[in-house]
Image (spheres, rainbow, N blue to C red):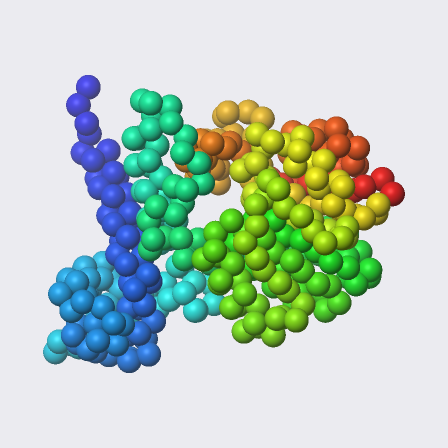
Amino acid sequence: MSVSQEQRERVMTQAQGAVALEIAFIGIANGLLSQLDRLRQATADQLAAAAGADAGYVTRWCDAAYAFGYLSESEGQFQLTELGRAFRPEVPGTLMSFAVQSVLSAHMAERAATYMKTGERPGEKVLAERESILPWFGAMLENNFGALFEQQILPQIAAFAELEARQGVAVDLGCGNGWYLRRLAAHFPHIRGIGLDGFAENVRQAQERAAAAGFGARLHFQVGDIYNYTVPEQVDLIAMTRALHHVWDQREKVFTTLRDSLKPTGMAVIWEPCWPRQRADLAQPGRRMMAFQNLTEHVQGNHFLNPDEIADAFRQAGMVPSVYLFANGNEAVVVGRNSG
């Protein structure tokens, strides 16, 4: 059986799409898109000087960005096109996360290909192996899930309004750049928050962004071990956003600690990708990326979970679970309550 021309052209289009996102990422990670927007127009050398980057690299990036429609050019002066502006990290609804995800996916695919023969699963450190990617990981998650959190999850889950009524304390385990607590604090002015993350870069960003948003007195972030965290006193709510699957191998300890770290009427809010019961569901367009991401999670020693597994773990810890589905069933939030 020979490869058809239709197949070849389809894959070529897909390959060019991946390259286009990689070019966008280079512009994002080096501040080229934002600097060119500020300058309005510039030569490659002027853009390099403004971004503090090597002129040779920037010249060749400008050629590539022009070829893929991010830049226009007139008499040696480059300007951003509308598509180029849409990838700026600071623009509302930015397309930045697609570019970050593309480069991260390529890195993780290479890791999976490398370790498949040996079975090695090196863990979370693989996320930090590419120094240009890690600073954008939290921003990518915020861009992907912030609106869903604010527009659907916050209004539909009563635990957050109860937290506000108590003027309580929320702990976010695996807080990333702090986006979850910042958005929670913006909606509920009487709560306080503590964020813990294993990467110092994430904690730095979280502290910086909380201060810039005026939440410095209400939100605190620190480097912490999600396996062995401690809180100074029992709290009202503990959140784990797309983090539980990273510690599922020690779930008995994790859920016991959750229960014991909460007040008698406290609540744990677990948000995870919703791994389907049937393999056939993975072929749906909205779940294809989940299947790939689960492969890359294996590199880190993890796997995605079905919400029934999470609910059962809450029951085994003596807590009462409730399951909520969002985003056409692709995202699951499981709330576990202490019995009081």
